[in-house]
Length: 194
Ligand SMILES: *[C@@H]1O[C@H](CO)[C@@H](O)[C@H](O)[C@H]1NC(C)=O
Ligand SMILES: *[C@@H]1O[C@H](CO)[C@@H](O)[C@H](O)[C@H]1NC(C)=O
Ligand SMILES: *[C@@H]1O[C@H](CO)[C@@H](O)[C@H](O)[C@H]1NC(C)=O
Image (cartoon, rainbow, N blue to C red):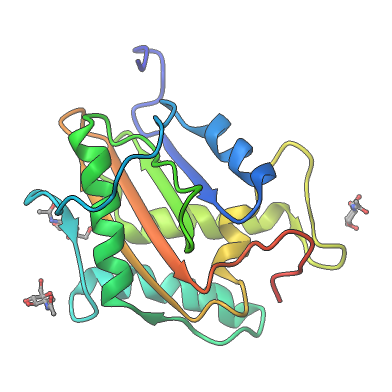
């Protein structure tokens, strides 16, 4: 799938949200198109790298979220073990399909930010790639630069979102899929994040 001329350190963010418009963008950004949504009720594989509030990785996800939120005057998120387990099921499913491709989160009631990397990316690095989309976002008119995506950033700073939980899986290809789920979800079309 990845020709040898491609970067070996490719890091791609995407988001699934309440609007079809952003979902299309997310699917276009996927390095290998996510297949149709399947049941997410199967238990997480043992190799899945899940985490919880007491693990260092939880702080690694949470801290950059809350820094970005504080920067725009939005209250911090708290860690959710339930959302973390739900995210673990999602990444385990993608892991079993072999390539750690983006999951189809269109049916989820939660917000979902995803990050795909061709290498074993650190959680903080993945969240930083979501926050970095903020450079294309103009709050004054709630728009994103044409041709860019701001959805992962706007979910990070969505005021009404209160909690998140994340998980990461690595595949035999060396790729890593990282998923964070948000409750309540952000990115309601026509609304400003804060
Ligand atoms: C949270 O993670 C730590 C470290 O991995 C583990 O020891 C602990 O049992 C976990 N707690 C829960 C509630 O899963
Ligand atoms: C799980 O992820 C954490 C944070 O990136 C990392 O430190 C740890 O080594 C990973 N564990 C496994 C088994 O991949
Ligand atoms: C929003 O504001 C930015 C910065 O002033 C501007 O470049 C952009 O054209 C505006 N977009 C719309 C749709 O008004």
